[in-house]
Amino acid sequence: MLGLRRLLLKSRSGLRLQHTAPVAVKNEPIFDFKQGSSERQALEKALHDLKGKTLEVPCVIGGEHVWTNDIQYQLCPFNHSHKVAKFCYADKDLINKAINAALSAHQEWDLKPVEDRAQIFFKAADLISGLRRAELLARTMFGQVCRFDPHQVKQ
Figure 1 (cartoon, rainbow, N blue to C red):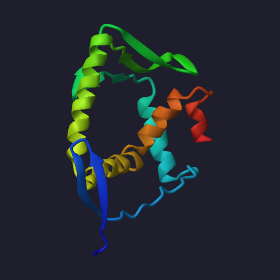
Figure 2 (tube, rainbow, N blue to C red; figure 1 turned 45 degrees about the vertical axis):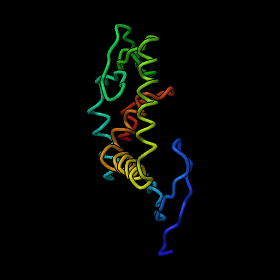
Figure 3 (cartoon, one colour; figure 1 turned 180 degrees about the horizontal axis):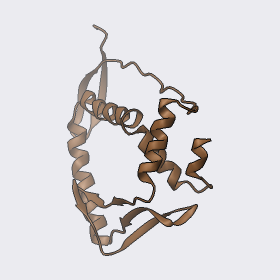
């Protein structure tokens, strides 16, 4: 069938016929972060850039950024004077609004062709593995429970 597989998918509106092409999947390379390597330099730069900065994380409901009066902070586990992130707690009304927005988005998502949905995940994977990799690793390191000293990266 020209390399296409037919998948029968069940959706809320009933059964529909969907064509999908197989996708080649490739694992990410494993980096050693050796002294002088480009990945190590990128990580060191990201750690330096994030040091002392606080990420603001609002509630996002239906694409809208919402802040409540109940502001909280995530502290760096090995340096409690460094606020890693600022976020807010949602109240019951905001949670219900988020649930309704998610249900509405789910209906729209369910109608997207599988290929379009896959492209969204591929784009996210490309960002995580490419442009944002060092930043994501640095943020993870600052949020870890175990003791971490950014100067250890330079050894």
